[in-house]
Amino acid sequence: MNNMQRLIRPFMVAVAACVMLAACASGPRVRTDYDPTANFSQYRTWGWYSPIAMEQAGYSSWVSERIKANVQREMDARGYRYDEKTPDLKVNFQAVVQERSDVYSMPRSDVAWAYSYRARSYVAVPVWYDETMVSNYTEGTLTVDLVDAAKNRMVWTGDAIGRIGARRTPEERAVDVDASVAAIFSKYPYSAGNGQPLPLPAR
Image (cartoon, rainbow, N blue to C red):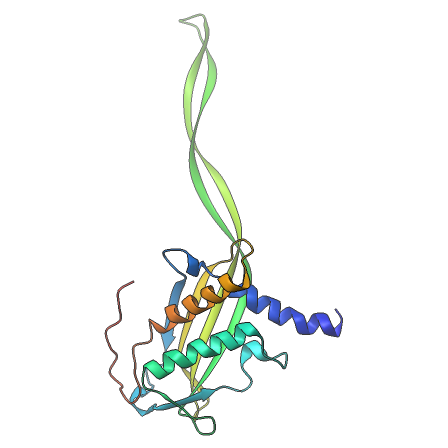
């Protein structure tokens, strides 16, 4: 792999991972985790982790810039003030693509022919069985981490997970990115200076 391929590959992975099921009615699947010892009431400002995982190739892309704009909007909406130099929280994000397989059973029916001595001929006998099916697909995961800047310790993380479908236009992918970030932060229950989690909207 030459240097150009090594630089381009992370960007292509990031683009692919952000083409989630956000366009579908159900949206991406979201999972979260947090540090139970963290005191969220002490966090009032935020900034970017350095280097951002998605930009480790040394440059940004329209995808990472789109994610940044969405994250800033979500943090602002929760009352966090951006502080480039000494933030309380640092935000990091990454995208990963993996090949997956689902194995499931599908009920089937068929007809077997058996000789009947009573009828002195072959007769059809219905047969029911389960057929094992395998579905191969590509899954993308967008992860957003909130890191305690003083301790360099992750205190909250959210993943948006979905199948990557057919080719989509950049405009459609941008909408998918917006929906994925929004889905992640819909599960973040805190606001600036408030350590009591707020009720989350039902999904």
